[in-house]
Image (cartoon, rainbow, N blue to C red; front, side, top):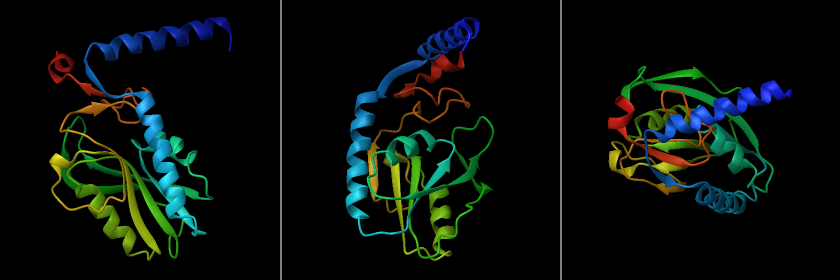
Length: 200
């Protein structure tokens, strides 16, 4: 990269750092905690699926892609990956609309496979409940859920979660794949938004 381009990238990064710090209320889960928990989850998954020849990780886009990338490198057994894009939020909305839409479906036939859905965060559970019901009709050998964050206080439907990174309180979070109006997914930690300062 040329020096001028490097300077531009550095300027943009510094501006972004200053930008999010204005409305960062607290760091809820830091980079070290995330890395440690990913290692623990990877070990558990590797052990539980050690006899599987067809483990498939399904990433729910967009929020889970960083979690999937890091988690996958902690799993020591062979596995494949595929991606789904689901929407149930309106533009600028902070809560689910209740209407689920499949924006991008799987390219893999999951019949006879051990499927592990990788999610960034589960709150009401309505969207994931729909996804689980739909995928179960495709006859996988097993169908389980791994979520980075579980916002249990907001749960409206029962979701069988096999692997949980962190159970968190009902706070609006961003970073490490989770967006704030499509920004800041690249932050290495999970932070809490100060909504009063973000609105101003």
